[in-house]
Length: 91
Image (cartoon, rainbow, N blue to C red):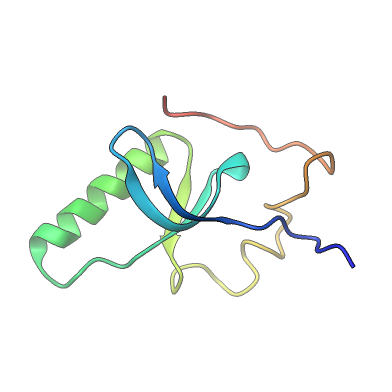
């Protein structure tokens, strides 16, 4: 049985700064990232990552920030050939 959702890429690097995403769907510009540590430097780095990702057209959030079914149930992810999602690259 074929899954209705494409598999993510694990350990993906976002943009020129190679921001790490634990899981990513590059064709759809969606990523799951780690939550920052509790110190201010880590939170600032996470803000920079999120801002750079958004500027490149990506939607990145931590696993907790994604709502149940938000990625999979909303039609955001489709197999190639099952509809087009516009893509913006940050390169």
